[in-house]
Length: 319
Image (cartoon, rainbow, N blue to C red; front, side, top):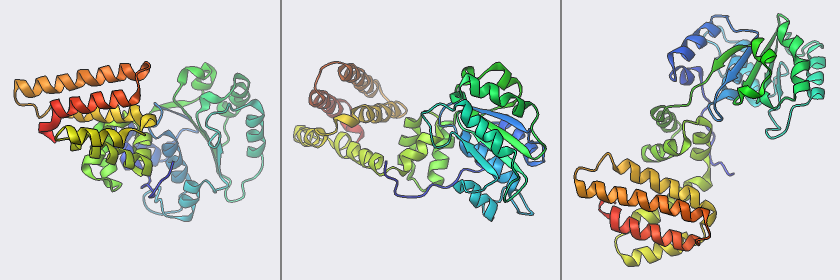
């Protein structure tokens, strides 16, 4: 996946806007009330690792003002993962299990004196990937953390964690991001407003997905392809031209259909007469049919042509 620009880092202010409960928790943490064992829960892509790193930055930050400052040497090192006081377990192996030997190595590392600071922050990414043996090996450390050690576990699969692990942690849940918050964040990242709306709709409340889409060249190219084909129809000749452009896009078929569905659904807000509403519903029915075809043996070209003709017939007045 090719990124063309660097994303703005998420801040506590971004997370505070998601819910009053989360905002209150952040305020408590910044006042020095961070639990030594914290379990950060939430759906995939809600920003759990980013939040954990912010907590680590808050603890290591050398600023005399509001922490984290996000600009001091310690904050920059936490962000890049090079601070020796931050131990990330499982961050570079997203699809693999975390074994008992990994936890034993962690415990051994914690027994040695820190190079940059006596303070240690352990972030276990997707803690549900720990085997039962690994979770059991971690229990004593969670139950009796040293004064200079903080454990932050992240997980999107709470049921895969042992009750004994959960009971030793303070739980904090990150909510899905509302669409308007995603749009605002994307615009702040430099994404055009109309593109931000499309990306937010596709992201399903996941800030992680939204930022990937926003900074992925191939996704932006797909948006352009969608606009140049489905949204540029005015006669049958234009359908033939769009069909030829979409011929090689079978691998992106599901995403293109998603984009068409989002575009069509958004038109419901603009429908001001019964005929317009009928056309939009016809288009949504055609999209549902296309999804069924995608799961069967109907060719991608036939599916594309079917959608293009329906788009010309039902939606051309909106382009």
